[in-house]
Image (tube, rainbow, N blue to C red; front, side, top):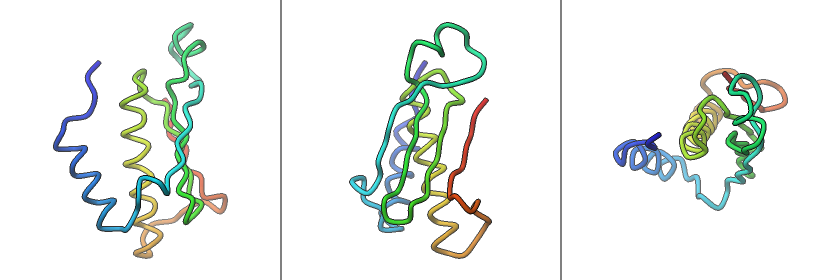
Amino acid sequence: MPGPRKEKLEALEKQMAELGIRPGDIEIKFIKASGRGGQKVNKSSSAVFAKHTGTGISVKYGKERSQHLNRFFALRALVRKIDEKINGLGDIKPDGILKVTA
Protein backbone atom coordinates (compact mmCIF):
# COMPACT_ATOMS: atom_id res chain seq x y z
CA MET A 1 0.00 0.00 0.00
CA PRO A 2 1.56 3.31 -1.04
CA GLY A 3 1.93 6.21 1.34
CA PRO A 4 0.69 9.77 0.89
CA ARG A 5 1.81 11.69 -2.19
CA LYS A 6 4.72 14.12 -1.97
CA GLU A 7 2.42 17.10 -2.54
CA LYS A 8 0.29 16.15 0.46
CA LEU A 9 3.35 15.77 2.69
CA GLU A 10 4.65 19.15 1.58
CA ALA A 11 1.26 20.79 2.19
CA LEU A 12 1.18 19.33 5.71
CA GLU A 13 4.72 20.55 6.44
CA LYS A 14 3.80 24.02 5.13
CA GLN A 15 0.70 24.17 7.36
CA MET A 16 2.78 23.07 10.35
CA ALA A 17 5.32 25.81 9.64
CA GLU A 18 2.56 28.44 9.30
CA LEU A 19 1.19 27.45 12.72
CA GLY A 20 4.64 27.34 14.30
CA ILE A 21 4.51 23.61 15.00
CA ARG A 22 7.94 22.01 15.08
CA PRO A 23 8.29 18.26 14.46
CA GLY A 24 10.09 18.03 17.82
CA ASP A 25 6.94 19.32 19.57
CA ILE A 26 5.00 16.21 18.54
CA GLU A 27 5.30 12.91 20.39
CA ILE A 28 4.42 9.91 18.24
CA LYS A 29 3.77 6.39 19.53
CA PHE A 30 2.84 3.36 17.48
CA ILE A 31 0.24 1.18 19.19
CA LYS A 32 -1.83 -1.86 18.33
CA ALA A 33 -5.00 -1.04 16.44
CA SER A 34 -8.41 -2.37 17.37
CA GLY A 35 -11.37 -3.42 15.31
CA ARG A 36 -11.54 -5.35 12.06
CA GLY A 37 -8.44 -6.78 10.44
CA GLY A 38 -8.03 -10.07 12.25
CA GLN A 39 -4.64 -11.44 13.07
CA LYS A 40 -2.78 -8.66 11.20
CA VAL A 41 -4.24 -6.00 13.51
CA ASN A 42 -3.58 -8.03 16.63
CA LYS A 43 0.12 -8.58 15.87
CA SER A 44 1.33 -5.30 14.39
CA SER A 45 1.51 -1.81 15.88
CA SER A 46 -0.01 0.09 12.98
CA ALA A 47 -2.17 2.61 14.85
CA VAL A 48 -0.65 5.97 15.77
CA PHE A 49 -1.00 8.09 18.89
CA ALA A 50 0.26 11.65 18.35
CA LYS A 51 0.40 14.36 21.01
CA HIS A 52 1.41 18.00 20.71
CA THR A 53 3.38 18.85 23.85
CA GLY A 54 2.66 22.59 23.67
CA THR A 55 -1.13 22.36 23.67
CA GLY A 56 -1.66 18.87 25.08
CA ILE A 57 -3.94 17.92 22.17
CA SER A 58 -3.81 14.21 21.31
CA VAL A 59 -4.98 12.19 18.33
CA LYS A 60 -5.31 8.43 17.92
CA TYR A 61 -5.60 7.17 14.35
CA GLY A 62 -5.84 3.54 13.32
CA LYS A 63 -8.14 3.38 10.33
CA GLU A 64 -5.62 2.19 7.74
CA ARG A 65 -3.55 -1.00 7.80
CA SER A 66 -0.42 0.95 6.89
CA GLN A 67 1.60 2.53 9.70
CA HIS A 68 2.90 5.17 7.28
CA LEU A 69 -0.61 6.25 6.23
CA ASN A 70 -1.89 6.23 9.81
CA ARG A 71 1.01 8.47 10.83
CA PHE A 72 0.22 10.94 8.04
CA PHE A 73 -3.52 11.02 8.83
CA ALA A 74 -2.84 11.38 12.56
CA LEU A 75 -0.50 14.32 11.95
CA ARG A 76 -3.03 15.93 9.62
CA ALA A 77 -5.82 15.56 12.20
CA LEU A 78 -3.54 16.89 14.95
CA VAL A 79 -2.56 19.95 12.91
CA ARG A 80 -6.24 20.59 12.14
CA LYS A 81 -7.13 20.45 15.85
CA ILE A 82 -4.24 22.74 16.79
CA ASP A 83 -5.34 25.18 14.07
CA GLU A 84 -8.89 25.11 15.46
CA LYS A 85 -7.60 25.84 18.96
CA ILE A 86 -5.29 28.67 17.84
CA ASN A 87 -7.87 30.32 15.61
CA GLY A 88 -10.83 29.66 17.93
CA LEU A 89 -12.67 27.39 15.52
CA GLY A 90 -14.39 24.08 16.19
CA ASP A 91 -14.97 22.27 19.45
CA ILE A 92 -12.37 20.11 21.19
CA LYS A 93 -13.38 17.55 23.79
CA PRO A 94 -12.47 18.46 27.40
CA ASP A 95 -9.74 15.81 27.49
CA GLY A 96 -8.31 17.11 24.19
CA ILE A 97 -8.28 13.68 22.52
CA LEU A 98 -9.67 13.07 19.06
CA LYS A 99 -10.10 9.37 18.27
CA VAL A 100 -10.42 8.18 14.68
CA THR A 101 -10.91 4.45 14.23
CA ALA A 102 -12.54 2.18 11.68
